Amino acid sequence: MAAQFGRRVVKGAATTAVAALAVAALSASQAPGVTDTPQGRQNANSQPSPDVNADDSATGNSPYYTDLPPLNSPTPSPSASSDTPGAAGNAEAGIPATVLDAYKKAETSLAGSKPGCNLPWQLLAAIGKVESGQARGGNVDANGTTITPILGPVLNGVGFARITDTDGGLYDGDTTHDRAVGPMQFIPSTWEWSGRDGNGDGKKDPNNIYDAALAAGHYLCRFNWDLSDSADLRRAILSYNNSTDYLNTVLSWLEYYRKGTHEVPDGTGSLPSNRSDNGTGGASPGPTSPASTPPSSQSPGGGTTSPKPKPPATTPPTTPPPTTTPPATPSPTPTETVDHLEDAGTGKLTATAGDTFTEKISARTETKAGKAVAKVRVRFTITGDTDTTFTGGESVATVVTNASGVATAPALKAGEKAGAFKVRATVVGRTVSGLDYAATVTARQADALARTTDTALTCVPGAEFADQVEVKATYKGAVADGVAATATLIKTADDATENDKGPYFKDADGKTVRTLAGLETGKDGLLKLPKLYADDTEGTYLLRITTTGGATLTVELKVAAAAS
Image 1 (tube, helix red, strand yellow):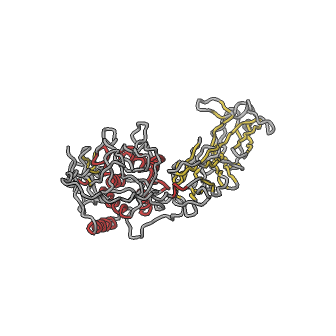
Image 2 (tube, helix red, strand yellow):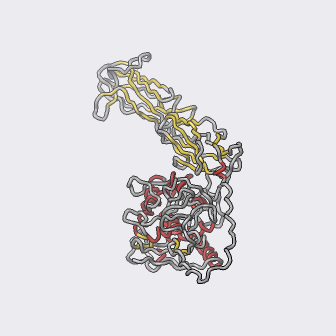
Image 3 (cartoon, one colour):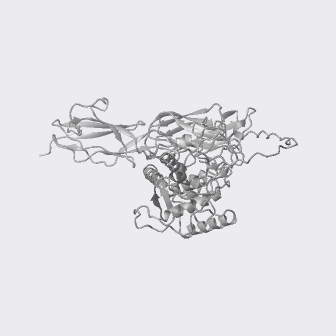
């Protein structure tokens, strides 16, 4: 079935006016992300902010579709499902079935893995509309992979950011420069760390809408951003493509989709017709050689169509053509001037399990002469057997160097797994030796244990103790939660071997046990032991509790016949 073409929006002043009306409508409806306050932006410096550098974004700030949604709200369709109100009267409200399914599955996945992000699937739909026209109107196969690759223009610095090849042409087919790839338009260097397997086929393919939508969701949920907060929503969108016009366009589609959408068959979605580059470098429908691509005119799907060849002149020129001046060699990018990485004063990297590292990793990019290089992307990657992540839950972070050539990674958040690991710093788009930073996570510790009550623990032979033993663990006076502990009924104060008589615990099968390993203090530092039982032997016995960190507490237990 032929694709339906979206209406053409007049550019220039008309586009600006429509955008202003759309944003005003968002504010009036109290849509998240649009407020009367100035646009929130992070401090640039060397932090992993979306507003630092032209090529420090998901898309490399590639061109995007500028078409805006109709000003009238979608008209609900009686046949539409309850969770996706229909809008049969507006072709722009229709989202291809597979693409819509991918957005919703990504929302569900993020709701489980990053519930604090509050990612709405309509935001993915808005970005998908602006980036690729919903995968070219849903031009995908049954698995969600685009039938023909969707490639952005060559990022060679001519009208766009200049990003030299980072993937050896693996994703974009270009071994000289990078290009944005797939329905969500990731540049290869970003996909390398943000790519996800959204359809469970064991691959991370930027050309697959399930993989790309899930990756986009995780990308938008970085840095603990809460997308129900207007400032965080703006930061997240700007991190995808750093343009205020892009932000306003995405917000317009977000609000439009929130008012209602309906599902349409794959391949029949409405296609945008206007791009931010006026079609001069629009995304191509498949891999083409940049050197052999002729001048192009914009096709409705964002691709290019070759102009009709002109017939040869009937009379050959009588004078030789003027001599053309060869194009000047472009100046090297900051990245191309980097010779090596240096540590920028990183201290010792240690933290207790569950805590945030107080020290941050900093690396400096330098030329061969030792001069600092600004505006260079440095990637920090956590390696080794660890569950430690950067703040926000990612194991990789890309940061742009500041004016001093320094890139500072986000803070490390220690997981529960104790041990050593490394963080590797590399320059994105440049083959230079990386730096390895050693880090260590120590197990949670306690240096003191105390009973929560002073009740005497007594029991008659063959019965159970009325009170259970409860202790509180602290470390340097603070509550020590999650600390591993062991409880053992020992022979004497000087002999810590397990006793073979006297009080005992019961396992799940009701069998006698006198050592409990694998215990752990709770959030409040408390540890309550299971019930204790007494055999027929009278006497005074000892229960010893020990924790990681060296805290020890010995509790006295008495077994005696009841007084007559």
